[in-house]
Structure formats: C-alpha cells, structure tokens
Length: 264
Length: 285
Image (cartoon, rainbow over all chains, first blue to last red; front, top):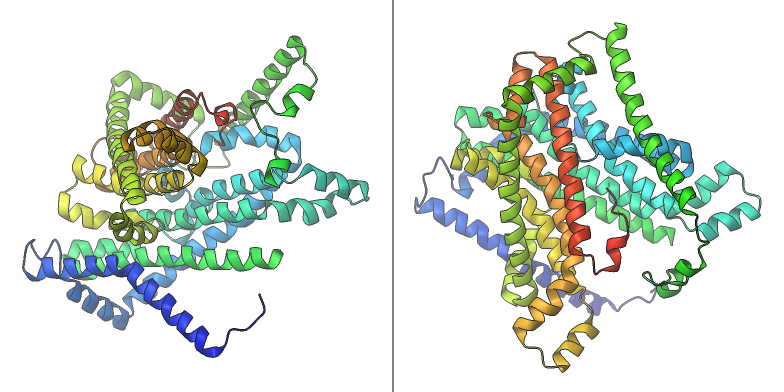
C-alpha cells in the first residue's frame, strides 16, 4: 500500500481516471445540450423551459445580489441544527433501546407507529407549536430525521457480536466502558447509514416546509420567484438545492469512508 | 469466514440445539409481548390526553386526543375520510405501480444493455440523493396542479430506489446459478423468468419496500403544496383555518394509512418470498 508510484505513471493514471470520469458523466452533458437546443429552437414555450444559458445567467445574478447566499445560509442553518439534534438524540435513543430491554419494550411500539408516518405531515403541527420561523423548521427536521438515526443505531448496536460483549464482560469491563468500547464501535456502520438517510430526509423536509410557509430560505425563494414568473431564476434555485443535496450526500460518503478506514 | 460466523439458516445447527419450549410458556411470552406493546401505546395516548387537559398547553397547541378521535370519527361518518383517503391512496398507488414497473424494466435494461447503463448510470447516481421535491414547482409549471403532476412527482421520487435495488439484485445473482442453468440449456427468456428474476426478487422487494412509503410521503406532500382533496390537502385546509383539531386528526389519519400500507407490504413480501429463507426473518419495520 505504501509503495510510491513513479511520478509519470501516477500522472498517466490520473489523466486516465479523469477521462473515465468525463466519459461517465457525458450523458448528463448530453441532457444539458438537449435542454439548451430544445429551448433554443422553441420546441416548448420559453416560460415552461427557459434556455439553460438564461438559467446560468440568472444564477450568477442571484449570487451577485446575495439573494442565494442569504437564503441559503438560513436554510442550511435550519437543516444543520435539526440534523445535529436528531443525530445526538437518535443515537442515544437507539443505543439505549438496544442495551436496556425495558427501554426497548417501551419505545419500540412507538417507533413502529411513527416510522411509516410521512414526516411532512408534521409541518402544520410544528407551525402550530413554534410559528413560522426557524424554530418550527428545526423541530420538523429533528423529528423527521430522528427515526432513521435511531433505527440505525439500534440495529447496529443489537448486532454487535455477542462474543465480543462476553469477552469484554469476562475481562471485567464495566457497563459504560463496554457500551463505549464494544457496542458503539460495532454499531457505527449501521448508524452511519442511518445518518445518510437522515441527511437526504433533512433536505426534503427543509424544502417542503419552506415551500409551504417561510419568509426566508431556498424553498421561499423558489416559491417567490415562481410566483413572480421569473422562471429562469426559479430553475436556478431549484437546481442549486438539488445539487446541494447531491453534494451533501457525496461529501458525507467520503467522510464515512475515511472514518471507517481509520477504524480498521 | 462469513460462512463460519453465520450458520446457514433454514436448517442450521441452531435450530436443533435450541431447547424445546413448552407451548404454554410460548403462549405466555407472546401474550406478554403483546401486552407490553399495547401498554406503551396506551401510555402515549394517556400522556397526550392528560397534557392537553392539564392546561399546561393551550387548546390550539394540543387538542385532547379524545377530541381528535371524535373529529376522525365525524370525518369517517360524513364520508370525507373515505374520499380523502381514497384519493391519496389512488395517487400513491398509481405512482408506485408506474415506478415499480418502470424501475424494474429500467434496472433490467441497465444490467443487460451496455448503452442503457452508460446513459442512465450517472443520472441515477446523481438523481438518487437529490431532494426531488425541489422540482415540484417546475412540475407544477408543466403539468398543472391536478392528479397528473402529483403522480408524476411520485414516480419521479419512487423510481430511484427500485432501479438501484434491481441493478444490485441482478448483479448479485450467483454466477453458479447462471452457469448451471446455461449448462442445462436454458434459453435467454427462460434464464430471465426462471432464474434471474426469482433470484433477484428479494432485493427487488426491498427496493419496493422503500418505494412504497416514499410514494405515500410524496402524495401527502404534493397534496399539501398543491391543495385540493386528499389527506394532505384536507390537513392544509384545516391548518389555514387555524383548526388544530383538524390538523391533528389529519396526522392520525395519515399515520394509520401509512401503518397499514407498510404492514401490508411486509405481508406481501412474506407471501411472495415464502420459498426464500429470508421470509422467515422479521423485517426491520
């Protein structure tokens, strides 16, 4: 693993990988070209599908005005705060459910009832409780993202190998020590998977709640621009949000790979 | 290594070594488990009712559970509940069916035709983690606010897990199975229908089990955003009139529909995969 490639070979390898990546994503490029041509030759009305070039122009304008940035910051703050809370509480809940039987018996039926509930249905309730501002969105994202994290932690911790637990116990490890040294590490892969689901969910909940009620944020901006009929700008924001969701997932995957590599 | 860790299920040594349990003890244990489940749900209900009646929160913030259930009952009697549930389920199921059939076909095409894989692979891998709900205003712009646009959104969201699961499933079919079938002279069509699809079915079902709740989620969200009838639309209407009993009744109704749907899907899975060892295992949900 540690042998270094000669410089030239490394370079060739890198360009090879680059060409491969480019070839891989060519279909997306083709779609973009098809979009531009469709709009250019007016095959559909330009209000339904503004040309890609106009959308890019509108995006640059939005960046210059600072509209995208200010709304984006408040959106990401909501998503980040809700997600962080859900990861902390969800992990604690899931591991306690796996570790203490009474907790499991008490909480499992409740988790089972709330799991299939479409979490967006909670949007009006969080508004009733906390109003139209940041608080209601953070609560919504927290509640919605908590269950996948809980289930991930629970399944991971429950599947921690009994042999490990027994041997740790026979060596006289205390309960807490065992939780931290044996159960948490073995729960990690499934927990990290649950968090990945939660990240995807947080974007969905964020956008839908902001589309319904908000004075700031990506969803608000999309709704506002759509209502004004500036569709090229609306497309720009829609694709920005979609790209951010995709980027968050990829960055998270990279981090997880790092983390699991370090663990082994 | 893995084979040592996990004894082959379906007839592994565990099954024979487990001490036989007396039927009476077994029945007692089942009853206890059921009791514990009912108990915690009742506890939750009682906590809600008491919190609402204690005066710590206003009626607007949390109407009493009994009142909410009364509202659900009156919805049921007036027929609104049936209409709204029917509409939501109709949209969710039509979208789910299109996504399921389309997703399996697309996944199969991608695993057999190199060109199809080349074209769709980046689209699937980029599109899967995207928050597709952000495209809702675009779909509204194209297709309006009625059933077509709602169902389009559902298909758009639910197709990704099906395609991904189908791809993984077909790639995961054991080589030995394919080789021996081919050796015995199976033609392409027989290979597909008798070997590849059945062997891939458990994984495909997992994808469908992800897609079904997703369909319901998107159905409810699109109804909330576009208005009209349906469980989500009814809840939004209640919310606009600051009718919090109606909002909570909506949540109870949607939760019930979601619960039944997920359970039904698990049942279908067990039925379809009765020949498969996995059918004996409990599903996660």
